[in-house]
Length: 471
Ligand SMILES: [Zn+2]
Image 1 (tube, rainbow, N blue to C red):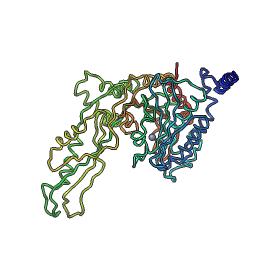
Image 2: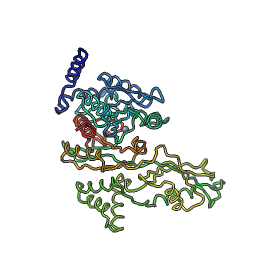
Image 3: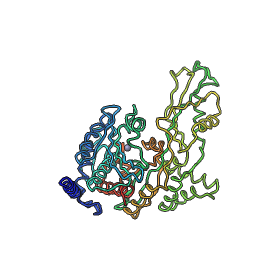
Image 4: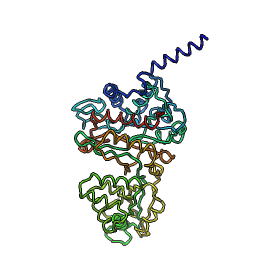
């Protein structure tokens, strides 16, 4: 009897500790100082590659201080990964929220402030990682703390992953290690991480792009061989001439245009809020009845005015390195080019290499594939519960915004997750176009508008709640 009384008392006490009740909406104004402090704490940690464990130590302390257990996994002790899990009732499969802890290096002389000072000035927080990727890390951390504090009942586990070595993964200590050795600790139906963006125009967010797909880097070398000889004697098999001709042919080759659900929806929505000339181009791209001539014109327009969108239409080939020659009077026996090939999701790479060889049509030039560092990854679906919630919450928070799925022409750690069957989505805090251009991720100077930080945390929190909380 006494025991039962004690249990009942303990239950009441623990309920009392969960204030405010989960049904009460969060007071975002009151949370601002804590959000800013945690975000600044994270930016102040110099977590350039090889120092990620410093961030893990901070996160471990922050989570465990509020009763959230953590696990760390390290292939390299200085580059640890951290996992924390809030248990749901198991009626739905887990949701993984992840962010990378490393930042790219800095050139201190380029910075007007301490790059690891998290200085708040002119409405911005300045520092390396303020855009990439500490807003996502801070938002994920706040979401975990708030879920725990409010005792939110979950239909699915929410798994928090802070991963190392996204920017410079020379040994596979980050996502590759986690997927290979500890996948059971992060396996989920959905993943949410960096890889999307929001564009602000004046006070309003006018565009939200939710990352659902990315291209795959599959590099190759072109190797031309011939007979070495004296520079005074022209030879038909000079490898420099054969390599130059091969590059010219590849440069002129229009690889086939192919849209997927993401890019079709993307161009369709862009057409609704672009200036008239561009809107017409976007409409042509998604028009199943467009004539070949109209399609060719639209693509030429993009190639000239919007190369990033042009790259979303096709697998691209870009020569990036040339190597040949040992002396001005020597014909070398070999010349080589490196090609940065970015393949559309679902591209048949072997067949693509064969097509390249057919376009080059020169037995003196060989296409030598370079093994890719990431797995091929399918586009994530845009008809899932998670995608719908991401879209709806963005539309609710930013009524003037065009919300659309996006395909990155770059590569990210989402590739490894998508390759394992997760539906993975990318998000990001809002920036004006000018700020994204002048203070970008990886730029000489990086900064985030303070006014973008709070709504971004609120966005992550709201999405996670709508996807994972028990209704
Ligand atoms: Zn990043």
